[in-house]
Image (cartoon, rainbow, N blue to C red; front, top):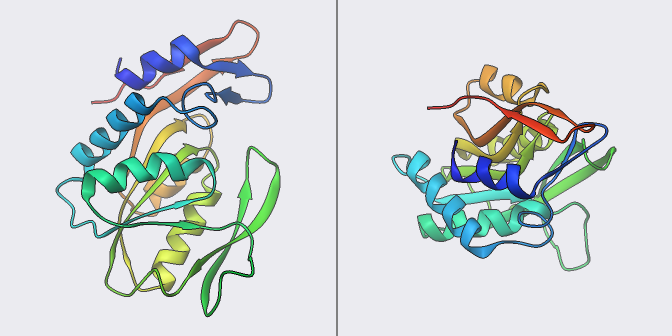
Length: 194
């Protein structure tokens, strides 16, 4: 069992509807020492790749991706979920559906911050059905960037997202893969990983 799986068992809360709440340490309140460890682990797993930019989606992925970008000493760009008056010029756009929020959003990245030939590492907190990840991949490829890999903190292995992304041929690394969880007794079963 790795450091993240131990923390999920200690502080994660399983809710009905296949929801795993990790807001006490990951995506609402953040344990900074844990974030640093996550950043180092993604650097260990993707350090052999020529990463020149880290990309994520707002909001929960930003804090995590910042620690990863720090480890790689590269910029972080995040896809915004709505257009605001301070975003000008041409944009890359993708539509993504959120498993957690049960809605669809258009996400955008300014063309000023993502360029042809860049080597992108995509980072996010959760992978369920894979819609957000597919949207980020679409944006990167629209820019002519190379997707070097996708790093996920927690993958719900019992949902299709991981399988879809791997079948598309992308290098996907998940720090913890939950194969089953039960809201009645709070149990969580992790997939064995090397």
